[in-house]
Image 1 (cartoon, rainbow, N blue to C red):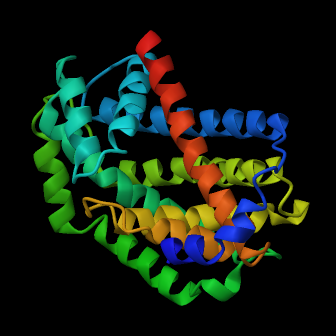
Image 2: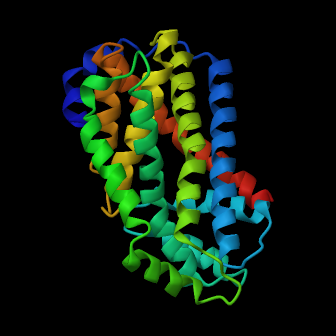
Length: 274
């Protein structure tokens, strides 16, 4: 879909090459994204502490940032493998780290479903693209799966690998609730990036937070695929196209993808310096 739209609207996109970008909005986007990743890193660190490992926040940030860079490579489980390797150098059980890294996408998906359902109650949301009953069913299924005997046995098996581990299914629920803030800040960053080129109205904050939450949901469902099918990008363009012409939405997509790479590189360099 993205390739088709880029070809179809190539002339209109070319006419936007002289668009002016306001740096102040990008600065705000970077600030809120950094706040969001710090919340995510802190939540991740608390989960590892439940396994009995007391590691400084700066070490968690370094490994988290470097694994995010590795995640841009094609393949399955790149984040899990990279984190398991980096944490093993600090004496952390690689199986526990890999398992936690594989659980993280569904945790973000769980948080994303909650954000989408809440924003549907607010005016200005993109409700025509969302089936609330389907999302409510997904949320109910996850809530039932967390305390299930099978999943609890899996957590007990993980916790048994360290004598000081205290991991319980309730901690995963708290992890998801903490990452609601990360998703809201990510959607706010998307809003600021869109504002940097003045393509959207000020009232677009709620639908863009909802859009980012939907991207988290679709990303968690597709995290097992070794290459990018463009589904998340298509969702972003479709929702943006309700607020602006399609060529502008495609330009925003390109800017957002490049911006994400630059931010990940910045965090990776900062992590190496810690």
